[in-house]
Image 1 (cartoon, rainbow, N blue to C red):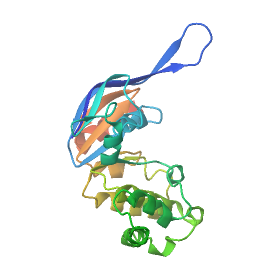
Image 2: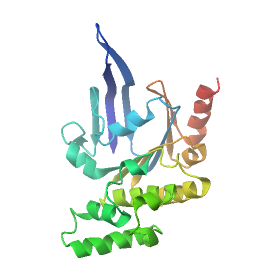
Image 3: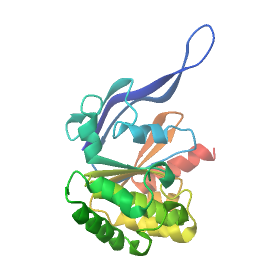
Length: 233
């Protein structure tokens, strides 16, 4: 269970003279227990800030965020073990030369033997249809392949929850569908931000974020029309 209790984020802005601040997310209270939660909103609305609160990439300046009873501020390392994060641009999280290298890195806490880790990395990539690119440079992969490698690397760390920030935004139609299918098939709870309303419609619950506030919260049939009213007044 993910719980936000008055969690908000305010940042200081560089300025001469009087200090100025900007609210990225107003104090927000939510209990997120559904298997699939989508977060939709315009660029700059606060979606990414909300998602980054969920695994401690961003800490609240007011209130708190608790995951399975663990506070992201005080128990950040354990929260990040439980909550895997998939970025919009996979190159921002693929840190090693090849897919096999990257997945193997995620496996280190679980497999001490290097040959066993390598074999397991290849097995996991094969499961995602990526066995043929396991030893290629990540820079030679398509956008969809990179995103699937990033997802595989996150899953190799055995998280209980997967948070994905616009995981299909940079992809063509074919690769978008591959990533959507991969996310739909996960056993873990998935919380994702997206501009893809078809993807949002597949969620159990949809949050609409506007100007740093959750302005609608409900089923897709309730929340998506509310989002459209926000962006098309």
